[in-house]
Image 1 (cartoon, helix red, strand yellow):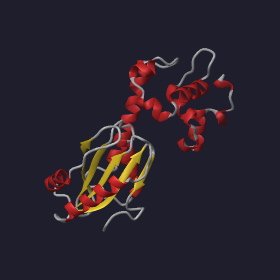
Image 2 (spheres, rainbow, N blue to C red):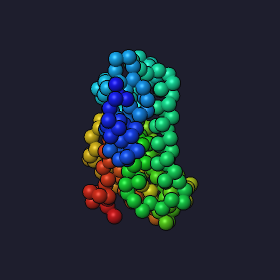
Image 3 (cartoon, rainbow, N blue to C red):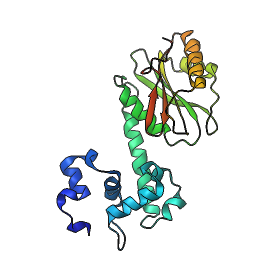
Image 4 (cartoon, rainbow, N blue to C red):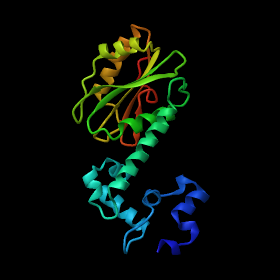
Length: 225
């Protein structure tokens, strides 16, 4: 029984004493689930669910029917989990709201990961910034198949002009889970740099999202400017 565990090993008490980062995925999920099922405490139940779905991300991606067919879960838990996911995304989005100056690439990565990691097809999106590198808006502009999205520089230029942007951060996801830049990625990045340069809009970075990973063109010296 979980109640018989030493306080230092109980997930809730461990979080209060050592912080959330000290908890394993199973312990975090156990706090969310709150109770186990007959013959299985909540931590063991969490481990079973993680093994079944593959990861926390796998649980988030599960459909309502897939989620509810697992022992110990149901519609109420599904609703709560989706609400937690959306709150997390909105928390990260608030850090990049209009007027927020991008002084940390990590905050940008965290936001883009939260937006794009669960997309099942390739999505190309752009963060539009003003001349102080403050966020104007984030837009998904192009959608593709499972492994490709057709990107048109003219459309990106039109949106940059519409928002009076001075700079942009390009982004797209790799549903394959490989956080690397392909030849096609490099080619479209350089085409966009040239097109945006004609209207004095600078490309600060192009970030590729693959699951929880993020590949930065700027950090790898792959931008032309």
